[in-house]
Image 1 (cartoon, one colour):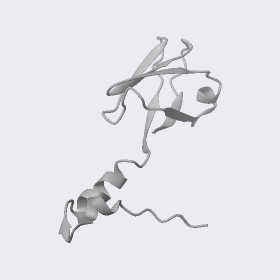
Image 2 (cartoon, rainbow, N blue to C red):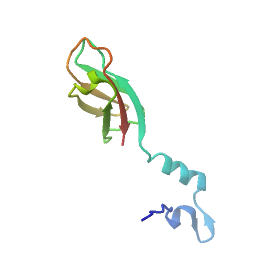
Image 3 (cartoon, rainbow, N blue to C red):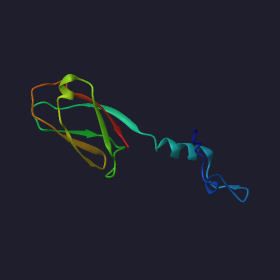
Length: 103
């Protein structure tokens, strides 16, 4: 089954008059797409802060380990406006790299 996303009628045309441009509609859809990035855990500390202006207080952060040392971690993530903090083990390994997605 294919779902087709269409804007509400009130966003495009109401009574023959455009209320919102089509580019504004596309931009609003684009802003709903997942945002991605990558980070490496800091060695010699138990927290790493990742700054990303797309993160809000209600964001969900999904991570995927990219290295064996990263896969061995059990990180805990807290979010705040503009960043998220990863709490992790304090090890000397410097290759604990992750991809992340903000939803």
